[in-house]
Length: 259
Image (cartoon, rainbow, N blue to C red):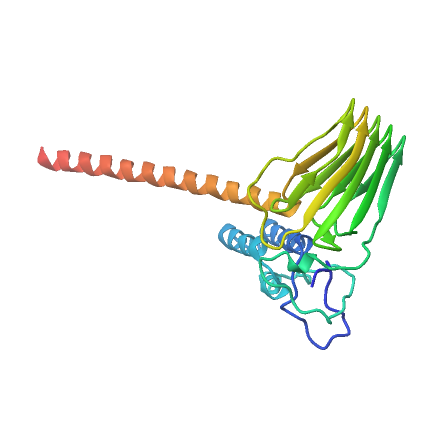
């Protein structure tokens, strides 16, 4: 299951095996932050549940995290989905190769801009054109119509930025004339089952940039992880300080009794 959605309200029971999206995890995280701010959760409970939320793969794993909060909401968006597809394999790209024609065939920016981002389906061939304008093609939360998609970019005195998630194989075949095609950083071999993205065409007095970035939910998870690590280091320093203070106190007591 790939859609950022919830079980149809007409269904007799929830389907806990359906895959959760980054947006679902963010909604649960927001409820948990509200619970912390209102005093319904202490810091330990909040951190444990937040960590579980960002690790959750399915609705069934998300639902218990907010069940006892009065503001709890179902971890999902408003769009109902069909249950004819089987749940995706955990930890794989299989759920994001959805087939079909794609939700957008191209974008045009003439003295303006275009963007394709969020939950959308990349067609087998996407055409982007920017003339004295700019475009953004963000694939981090996108589904893919096929295991290989082609993104053709033409930038004339303008620019197009393509953002891909880590683990996706990227091939850049574009030509720059007084312009350029940027290659993304190499983050190792592609993940098993990840799609292949081929970026081509040309840039004239313009540029096509390609970069790798994690999703906003992953950025938030990493931020929370770093904050937790800082708290743990601070607690360790405080514990060491308390231990040394107790040692000095015991040493003073021994000297006093020795006198």
